[in-house]
Length: 570
Image 1 (cartoon, helix red, strand yellow):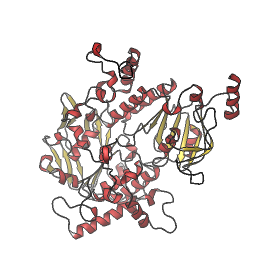
Image 2: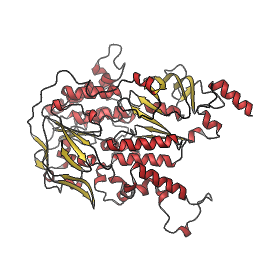
Image 3: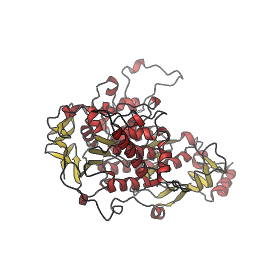
Image 4: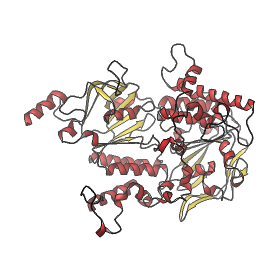
């Protein structure tokens, strides 16, 4: 048996080391496609050994996830990796089932909602329903809650003892939670936590499943600057201890951690693999400086006052989420504001700031000086405020309905009135304060086509225009597609169109590039800088990454820094 194993390793892997992943030169297809179909990946050769740390970098939306799906067995490899090891030789040799030994966590996909319906994401700010009081521990880590009456605990139906944690497992859990910075949030309502906090909790939940390989797609997206090194160090430590091995999915604009030794760069149907220093030269980064046009549009520094905040405080009992916005902070037409968080602690308050600007937060009504569009928040009806504000945020992306009847055109058309249901003629809305006229409908239809042509596939998808087709023809075809069938990046582009289509006076862009491919980011930045936002509009870009702001200080951008819940203009 020993000689047979050694011969197999030498013949198939040409090394005395058994690789962890082994894909010989193969094509990758979707199940159901024949070998004559266009492969998802062509001539993929990829071998991973122990003591290597890998990142998958994708230049387009969904490319990283597709390569991860290959590892998860969701795609067909032809020819299949040879026996006896198959795709995961080291796991097979150890007697482990490879496909129950992998866990995939993506931070680009929305939470599942039954029927694809809209859910009220503003509920997180009130936490008034009983189900909203469920804590992070209760929701994601119930095994850490000791039973109220341990002597009365009955065995499960399968005869096993009640599920819980051993003392050693509990100590390991407490240490991991402490290192990742979530100890203080375990017993807070999960609905009130920030995106970054819930994302880190999902990583811990995945680690508790004890996989051999943990695939994390975009773990840094939406994470504040000071928590990134902490998370990366935790992931490095876990990978070094193989508890579990970790593979990262990164965007081309993301920095590659120092401890990563190898990179798989996905560019369309080609995957370039190798040592980091060799492969990184092939990656084209989206750079916020080099993409700026030489000639900038002149912008007036004066305009109508859109946001005016003074002495704004938001508290949940003894805990303050936004404290000390004590000076007059304003947003006027024309200039952009980059709201950047640099927190001392996690949950910096940028999500709370966004909820105040949209009027979603219940405490926005009680602020003594929160003026939006020249009026006190309490004096503006919410439907009117929604029509005056174009929004793209992680919360809206998760909440937006994805039922089968919603087309791309319908999704964009909801942006005029700020709702979530296609209404009115041509599905471009009914109007808020007064019904739309024929001229209004015509203008709205023209605006839909304008954003579809400016931000549609013709601007970011290679080969989208072929056989003499026009950009308008590509836009028309895209407008008919079902929203639910789009990739994550395509859905985000459509919701960006939705935020911009109505020329709302105030535009709020929170983590706007999350999930988008490189071409999409480039097209969106170009449109925003070159006429997508007019001089009569104000823009707030809410981000942890300052380089993601499409404009610079030379364009009139002001920086609003949130530090430990305290906000101020820099």
